[in-house]
Structures are given as C-alpha cells and as structure tokens.
Length: 97
Image (cartoon, rainbow, N blue to C red):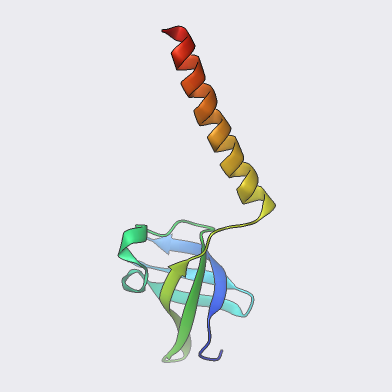
C-alpha cells in the first residue's frame, strides 16, 4: 500500500480494546480508536471512511481516518425513510391534539 488516501468500511470495532479493522479493496487494515475523529463518536460497522496507511511492523495501520458520506442507493433510501417517518410522526401527533 502506498502513502495515499484509501476508502473502505468499518468491518469490526471492539470498544473495550479500542481497535478494529477496515475492509478496503486492497485488504483489511487495522485501526486504533486514537486515529478516529473524536467528534464522530465511536465507529460503527459499515461506516464508510477514508484514511491513510502506515506500515506497523509486518501489518498496515490506518491513520487520519475521516468519515465519508454514504451515497449509495441503499443509504439514500434509508435517509428518505427516516425523514418520512419523522414527518409522519409529527403530523400524527398534531392530529391527536
């Protein structure tokens, strides 16, 4: 892996141990929570991220991890469903008054 930006998804994260793995087309990459932005909270499975890679002994480690907005059809549909559910709930609560 070269020193360029890669993209992938959080494959797994162990909150107790503070580390996890990112699945990228180039292979699985280790990451530590200290390399994840504090403002984003803890990473969740399937979160899309971009990152740089450094050699860590005989393995690769993700650094400078940043979230990436998921623009897939599935994610857009999920956002639309959530927005519609919120609007419907608000309308129904107004009708009940």
